[in-house]
Image 1 (cartoon, rainbow, N blue to C red):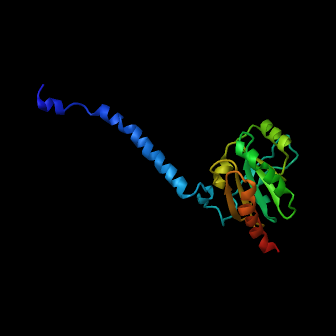
Image 2: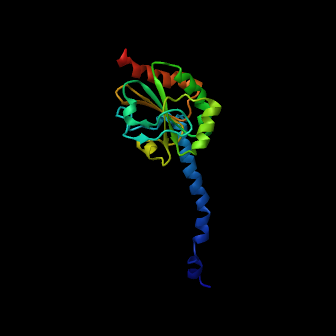
Image 3: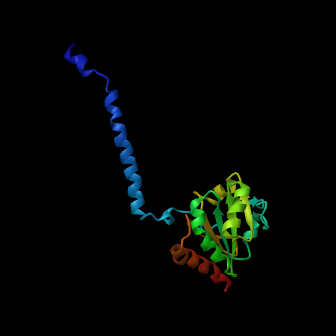
Length: 193
């Protein structure tokens, strides 16, 4: 074997060792971005804040004595729109905050049940309580896409004119309720006072 033949050996096996390094660099970049935003999911922009709610018409959740939900329903009163599912663990975490919000007579709380089995959604609400005055069933996820939902749970504050004023990504915990959601509701109520 000549020196030239030795230098022409395939380099394939060496590149396979670079693959883990590439994966590591990609993950490091993701973690760095998360650190920069301090894990704040609110840093994810929403193109719909300040715009009218999207047009949608969702049927009612069978087995629950609440009407369905459509875009036209979100005018006339400040409304909290919560996108939830029975299979969503974080939805259970935020549910007590939604129950508390539903007690405020100045607003209404409505739900969009996302890609769920109706019987499971009914059991979820029977177990935890039903804060929603209306529930629209989004079996295909089309309405959620129109709302710009990244994943469940997500919550929107809509003013009396049907304009989205705030978007909360992820579960609402007690601290988040006090720090961000309630101030957004109060701001949406201001023009009504």
